[in-house]
Length: 608
Image (cartoon, rainbow, N blue to C red; front, side, top):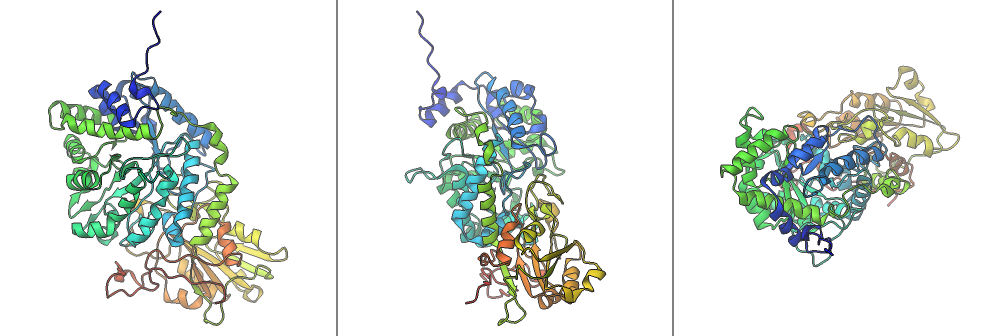
């Protein structure tokens, strides 16, 4: 009687990870190895792509969903379909599916959308950030996602940058503390875990991704994908420290930055990617390119693609976020390896790193989604966590025209109050970019609570709430009839380059709306923005109170709970608030530092 064939080492769950990696690598052909290095967008992820090209990873662009308002179960159906195609290949290597879950699993309808990173920086609460990471991991895994492209650990040098809200702040120490998101997403490694080695605690966790290595927040004039002019010593002092904290937590992946360092594009920089990150810092996970990051290595973008591939892969990029023209990438990679222009040792190193993360993440044992987690999506516990984050992130910049007469907290039993402004009843504006789509949207885009909803729920039964998006002359003529006004203004959603701004004024005539109301009615301004913006002298003078509410996400109740006095203000500015754009960039470490509100500023509404 013939005995049952023993499973391969790589198929043995209790075998050491490195033994599994080497065993599987030894069985792989060149096309299978190159396939593992290839990440494609979900819209081109056909069964043939997995069968013929052995694709190793799939992602979705911001806004690329199975269909409008697709729920977590619909995402899980789609991702499991991709996974089954991958598992049907000769070696049965699972894909790793990645998404920009940067403030919750924000692509998915009904998910809890937490406040953006700049707001979390204002909380100074690393444990809160860790808990948000854990909640995000559960909701992501419920949808079939294995990998979150988070956290962004850029140190913000200039608020003109369109990704300012993705930063925790301008201080390297603060940003480093907020990297606790990694332990929330992946789980906390044991004390003896080797520094730089990937760690994922189990199937309720996701692979994290520290980004964008390195210096993305320090570009000249805050230009997105621009040039960071700095010595290596400055990189080590300002931009690298958060990565050290990520590596100490076992972060499994790192994304390269679109930006350049002293004119050298990071995607092609061997010194930074290989000599610094992999060799000096000891990173044993894998480096992924950014979206079409290789295309940007030539001018015009995408020209001489073969050379872009050679340069980036030899520099240390392990997985390429292609995302569409994967057949060309695979053909060019194959030619480059066969000609010796990309050494086989470089390919093996990249694939080892990718397989290491897949084994550590348990994808071979748990490749498919866990439908038992669907109940966590947008659950009460996670929404309460979102409210807590909003409460702790609000920064009180002004409270009363006179120090001895604080305006807040507001009287919830006032007879009549006016709520107005473009952002008072707009969930999309509250959430900002990277919510359901890449650039964000306006309106009731998902399940959540606007500021207006929250105010109506918080006030007394006999309080009349009058709401107008734009205050009418007729309403303002009734100024004596209002106890106070709450005016919510701010930025419309944006992401990346579309968010770059040289003016940083409040859009939609926000300053004019504020002053028009404040001249007639005692006014609280709720500023919904992803960064400091210009505060006109009239806004500062005429308003009674001013709150930086950042981009609070779906849980607007957190704002009402603080302005009505259920909780005190705790937030402290994670960035310096400039007087005029001509003063930018501000640097708290220089003698010329002269902000409107300094780094760390934040008032209390409670009597001392």
